[in-house]
Image (cartoon, rainbow, N blue to C red; front, side, top):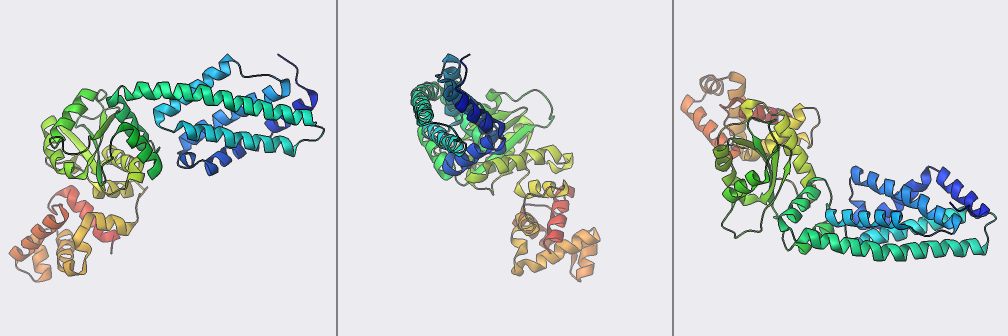
Length: 391
């Protein structure tokens, strides 16, 4: 290993000893490159790791008058291939490196001390040569990986949904770019359906089983192709919202249960997935009934019961009660309250001074308006929680 030029070695060591150096690089990339502004904590940790490694290598090359070797180039090609797989544009990746190079230059300048003009020129040469080499190597690896993925369309579509539920491509521009490259349009409004066999905890879901379910939910090919992937023993499907009404029968036929989230925007597909997955984890057995899916309202009530609500009480109340929150339906909400508190239609009618048949008619109207039967134990509980927190 070549010995460093003493003045450069001193500056290199001082920069690497400062734990905030890498944080400043990551912060600059996060702030200046839009694609990186939407990354989740897991991906930012990956950016931090790459920044730490790249800072160390570039400073070492500068200090020793070295150049990028085969090992470094292999790693950069691997990074480019990974970015192609997760859909981060190569232009954004290279811009991130240019931003990082600017931060690194500032770090050296702040500790210039006895550095000479020759040292400054050497730094510029290292950074410019490295960026030029990276552009060539990474663009080539990115293109090769993109072509490989595009050649397997099913895999490419699965990877897109994997990224969406991981929180990547949350910005409209990133989603539009990835969708355009795949020649698809994401459904908006959409239904995110997370489904599993009723005997949960069994073997991993097969892609063949998911394809079979998709065929049952299809509309004859008039809508954009749905996206699907697998998470352990669960299927995850991103469907046009209109497809949700076909899901209960298809799932019952297979002995599956599911949670369908339809109230989130395209920028919150990751949140919709967490909500649905947590609902399936925590819902009691009697919450699942033939011909019925868990919905946004069920999922939010379950999150509330678990102590980590994902929405405000008023929003949860509106999701579950629907039109019952409107002033003109106050008589129905009053009937629901009386029924829940009295325990029977007869007792509730007596409390409201109504004929029992009138009370039962109001209960049927409640079911029609909310898609929740007050006589069903689980649905009665969700209605009770919603009317309580929404009052």
